[in-house]
Image (cartoon, rainbow, N blue to C red; front, side, top):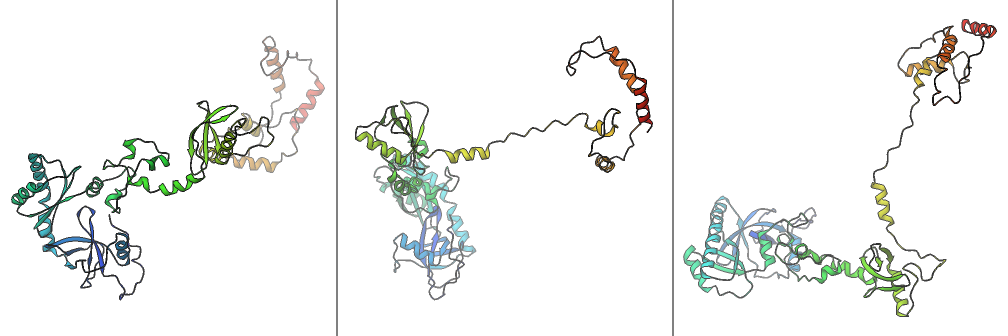
Length: 430
């Protein structure tokens, strides 16, 4: 409920400093008082101010040049009718004010009982005692005029104080009670709104809002004041949007308006109440309306004639598609399967019937072993009877069916060639 003084950091001449201070009271009520004695005040200081028939205590909410602007906004004249500030409130003043405030809740409950006994059609919302404990103000709301003359007499004799009855509207009542709105912030009527303007359901229609009373009404039971905040912006944007009073006639069928995006200048139509909607810009809609007035039916919503070569450029939901692609979960890339025999082939020596590749060198082999964290291992010599073992295995498996990897029947081992065996033996010895 505190106002932000955005001119506090600016150096203003002391001679031209505005001497009127804004003071806040219970329920967000604010009034203006003159600092005649030029007391050094800060925002939030409790001050004793002059009121009719006594004195009251409030808190400084605003001072300086912003007070002049607020008075011009609320059309308050700077004349002799503005009362003065007595002094800063001391501890004795605050204790006496606390005693008066402790009487407010019992007085509220007792007054409601008296109202029910007299059968008055009014709703009592709040009671505020003056700091000098000599006067109490009763805030109430009622639909019709209420004769509370007898009630004032009973209250004056019951509480031994001067009584003032003040009628407030439902919005002012919500502002005095306070609360949190659906936006998550404190109610506007309890913070900064002072002049309540009328709000009609046409404001919701212009903004394409659903006419649901539970969503459009505030805590006061009336239409929300915030419906008027953006109404001027919507009214200026609606000037470029054509008024579609009836379905557009096309050769593909009647196109009925389903939705309008005011700021993007897009209108959605459907053929014969289908679920598939087509987005068309406002310029194209105006063109089709002119054709219907002349008695001409376009081929469809996008083309005037069938098989038209010139494509009509329309705005689409391209920006929404880009956002969907941006924030959609991307599929993880599949890693290529690593060869199973990679480690085995690196550590094993070359076979006798294979020739070494050109890029294999001792340096590459050493660096590869260092990366694997082990020392360089010398290749183990190949056994001489390796070919013999392979031949025996092939003969033992000759009767079995061939596996998926081998194609066709296996060849029978031929007769041994002693010349080739001698050559292989010589290579292994080298």
